Structures are given as C-alpha cells and as structure tokens.
Image 1 (cartoon, rainbow, N blue to C red):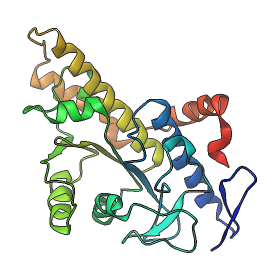
Image 2: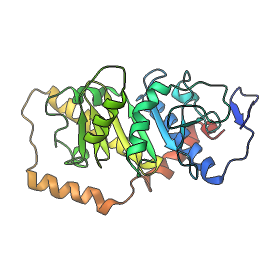
Image 3: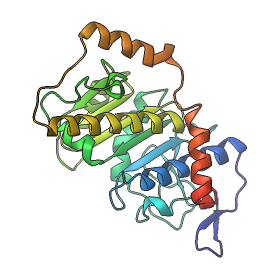
Image 4: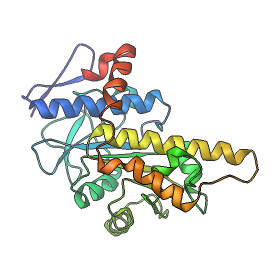
Length: 258
C-alpha cells in the first residue's frame, strides 16, 4: 500500500479501499475532530482505534505527532494487533499507546472501536474512592455497567492487559483510576456517544460535589430500572446521534473527510 502527498500536505492513500473501510476512516476521523472540538484531547496523546472492516487483525489509529484536529480519513494509519504499520505511511504510530487498545480488541468481539481519553472530569471521578455515583440520568446509563482498573504506571504490560480486560469483562465503559476513561463500541458512533455520556456524568458529579452538600441519589431499585431502560435491549447507541453530529461537523470543517 502506498501513499502520496496531497497539495494540502495530508497523506492520500493511493491503493483502492473498500467502501466499508472508507466509511470507517471517515467515521473515525470525525470522532477525533469531535473530541478536539469538545476539548477532550490531551496534546497529541490518547487514541481512538477502529477495526478495518473485512481485514481481521488490522486496525486504524491516529498518526502519532498530529493533534486530533489534524486527523483526517486519509492520514489514519493501518496497523496490526502488535502496533506494526501495515503497508506504508509517512507517519509513525504510538505502538505503546495502542497496547491498551490491542488488549481490548483482542478480548472483545464487539470491540469495533475502542476510545481512551485523558479528559479532566473522568480522571477526577476516577480518583474518588466511590467512583461514578448514580447522581444523574447520564450516570445511570452506567449503573452496573462501569468497570474500574487501578493505576499501575506508564508501562502497559501484557500482564496488566490481562487484568484490565478481566475487569472490563463485557461492560461498555471503564474508569482507569488516576488515568482516564475508556469506552468500547460496536461502531465508532457507539463508542463516541458512550464517551460523551460518561464525560457528562462525570462533569455533573464534580459540579454537584462542589456545593459541598449531601447529594440526593435515587434508590437502587429506581437506578436499576432506569439503567435497564437506557440499555434499551442492547440497541447500538449512536444511530440517531451520529448523523446529526456529522452534519454539525460538516458545517464547521469538512476536511476530516479528506
């Protein structure tokens, strides 16, 4: 697979792509741009990875060294489960950073997209002993559906990967203590909408706690019933939200599609 520079300086893929891969690239690039637009990015760090449709064991990830608002469909890098570049690319990848994603992709058949961010409210809540409280409707989406992983340092080893995926199990989201947030989606849209909901829940909790007053929480019965309603029989989330988000992004900057 070869790439060529476009006049804009982006990397254009010269080899044919399937329609499914092209769609995955556009969706993934859009997720990066939306993360940047919301201020959830962290310089050039953290990643959103997606499987390449029709190519088991191959994934798309951001070029390491670019900010999220520079990511577009054509400069996403194709890699294997070990973080090695498949084909050619003028950009490196952060193979060490992908190791966390690789562990989840390998363990979960439904992990088409894995999103890991260092957003401030998520880290703040992850550092609290009780983690995310059922203090809002947004938080109730994760009632009984949120896992936790204790901080083990910068180096992500295979042993830690086993512990992380063991804690994640079949849940859609995780708070990595002192580190950040993680969501797993059957589509890019689902991973993004789950992340948006989780971040909103964390923001609400932090602001509610700032008043230094006791929080009013729903009963366990109501929380469980609401969580079941929000789960909606396991429907793939983001189906309605994603087209609207893409239209919003298109009005601002369509270059993510390049």
